[in-house]
Image 1 (cartoon, rainbow, N blue to C red):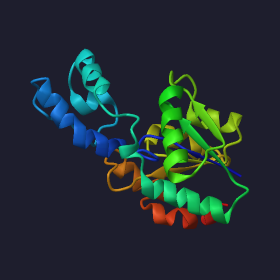
Image 2 (image 1 turned 135 degrees about the vertical axis):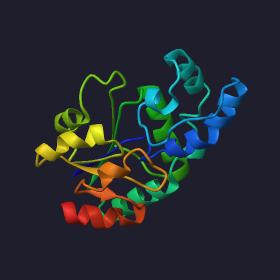
Image 3 (image 1 turned 45 degrees about the vertical axis):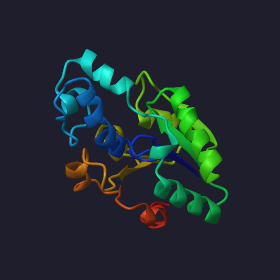
Image 4 (image 1 turned 60 degrees about the vertical axis):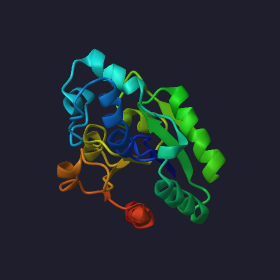
Length: 194
């Protein structure tokens, strides 16, 4: 079995990073620090021109050790110890360089290795298609757009990650059948799915 994990708001606490860093960045740019954490798209979150949003994004810590989620990594690592034959993959829309930095932090500081990394920074194909092409059996992702296509197929499956810091998927989480709200439930969710 191969498990796939997204980076943002799954392995990496992106929402926490945004809440911590964006107010200071916006102040430094003489902008009022108002943004909507329940929105997923940058344009909806900031309601600013795209060139200003890009300036904000360029100052954010998208690939630092500080925001790697230790609870996620520990739960995955414990599951791997119990089930040593499973394969672990990262499935993300991030670029390869940023993804490899995060994977290296997880390997160096948490001693967890991912067998494969699948990136599609251009967003050309869906995560469902990435999972099908690479035999990923279960994907863990935080976004409705990435998880919805999995409803129509029996294999692969997707689990919606809706931990407390993730605010953009709460309404969808109420109706989706496979939701992870606490990393300590990883074993139970996987045991129920396989």
